[in-house]
Length: 169
Image (cartoon, rainbow, N blue to C red; front, side):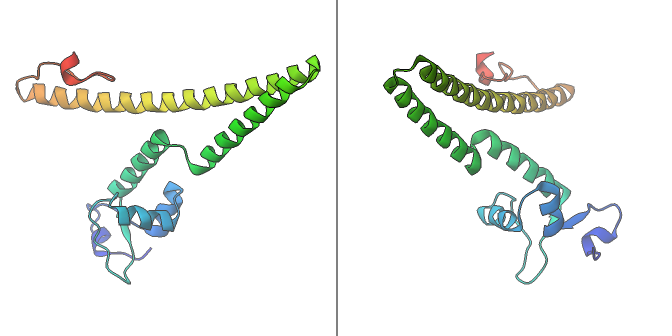
């Protein structure tokens, strides 16, 4: 990678070009540009015809964006999979009601149950990821509060806890 003014000095933060960031994060060049357009990476110092440069902070921010995106909403391929499973479930339920064969009805209902189990697993996975983010945020709040305590700053009425507002206690 060619040296830039920003990375000649060893004390300064390393910079990455768009291809390196794409490889490190698993995002496409197009997605990175789109995130820039949306302002997700903050103010950019990119001029037409120049290489896009990213800092370690940008990469950390992209990692957080990916984590929050994953938590807040399903990727499109996952949405398609869930919709397909829901359609299959509806079809199977109709067929199970219409059949007179107990064995056939049991087979179809077993598949419906498998679909519900898969959907529940997806919900639980999402829930675990949200809880992970809540723990991370709580650790950050606790760290800031410790730092404020060390500075002798007066405490708020209550501490923030996952699922509770600051005044809930």
